[in-house]
Amino acid sequence: MALLEVRGVTKSFRSLRALEGVDIDVREGTFHGLIGPNGSGKSTLLKAIAGDHFADSGSIVFDGRDITRATPYERARAGISLKFQITAVLPELSVYDNVLLAAQSGETLPRLLFSASRKALDAEVGGLLERFRLTGRADDLAGELSHGEKQWLEIAMALALRPKLLLLDEPTGGMSPEERRVTGRLLAPIKSHCTLIIVEHDLNFIRDICDELTVLDQGNVLDRGDVETIQRSSKVQQVFTTRV
Ligand SMILES: Nc1ncnc2c1ncn2[C@@H]1O[C@H](COP(=O)(O)OP(=O)(O)O)[C@@H](O)[C@H]1O
Ligand SMILES: [Mg+2]
Image (tube, rainbow, N blue to C red; front, side, top):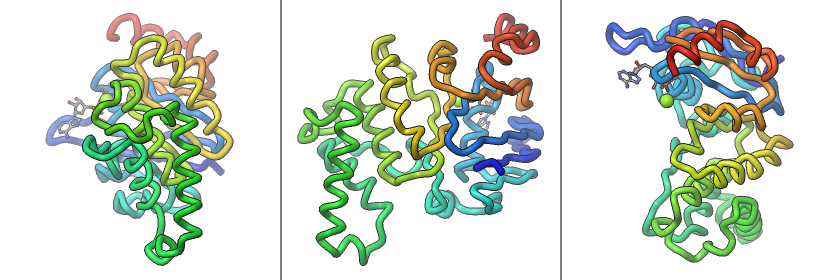
């Protein structure tokens, strides 16, 4: 059974049908890329999974549990983390404190009152900063980070909640080619403990890190499969050459 099963999800904004019956299966331990032209419904689908939008119809089953009507908070507790959803970067706090706050939001109050838990959190925050190349910036204000570093901080914060499923919507937007390459290298190791759905425009980036792809077009799944299958798909080629 897949970690995430999306079945027949529709979502309309007044007369506009942003999602028209989308099915997606995401297996545990895979990186799943979501691609498609602008306005094809990629962000709406991520929000429907995270609970920022409720699907008008269809169902979403996560980790064996029907979360179709669950609140964003309940979905976060169940293990779904959308970058931006829980905590956006607080520019007046240090980089360290931003990650600490995110990590604490995943803890219960009784646990926070024990110093052992604080030590564990400190080790976890330190580990995340190191993995996302932010150790040297731990004491700097988050507002002073470069654009790329801010993106990495936000990913570190999303991971501080120890999600089973991480949702990233165009994390490399505005990054330099070198920062994109680094982002791919930073994300690769999380596969051992976290499944990923990532929306990306950069098809080279997607090809390098994703196991499977779903292609959306005008709110419908145009095609799905592994990277080779999608690269060979004439339907996909047609949409990408005529509309992207
Ligand atoms: N909150 C909203 N209110 C009204 N229309 C929206 C809203 N969010 C998205 N849309 C519309 O839904 C369609 C899909 O949008 P979106 O999911 O953002 O596409 P993508 O992320 O693939 O570019 C677009 O036509 C967009 O204008
Ligand atoms: Mg979008």
